[in-house]
Structures are given as structure tokens and as C-alpha cells.
Length: 92
Image (cartoon, rainbow, N blue to C red; front, side, top):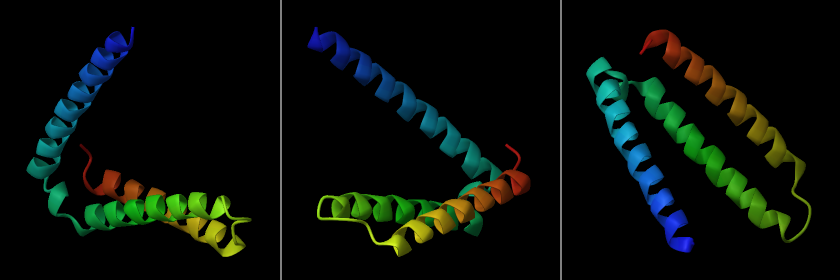
């Protein structure tokens, strides 16, 4: 039974990688891959992911300090605004 799930997971991963490669080619053709908006959105997204993983680590030791929650909210709003600007600038 596990092999069926494993094969299904591998097929899904293959499909997502192929689709991501196609999307990356579209972004490169449109000039989006060179855009500072794109790279700043990617950097802020990685920062948000790192902060949330750090908060998960802190959650095991006690309560999470409140400034972290405000930073998460601000990062989330900024990422959404940058994504909206990217969609407006590069309507793919």
C-alpha cells in the first residue's frame, strides 16, 4: 500500500516540477525574472518563512513574544502588496 502512495507522490512532484519549469520560462520571457519587485517579494517570502519557523521553535520553549506577531503581519501585508504590484506590472 505504501508503494502506491509513494508512486502517487512522485508523480505529483514530477508534475509540479515540470509546471514550475514552464512558469519560470514564461517569467524569463516576460522579463519578470529580472525585476527587482520579483526578487524583493521572494526575499521577503523567505524571511517570513524563516521567521515563522523560528516562532515555531520558540513556541516549544514558552510564549512567543508579541513583536514577532506584528512583524509577521507587516511582512504578510507587504508581500501581498508586492504581489499585486507584480500582477499589475507583468500581466501574464
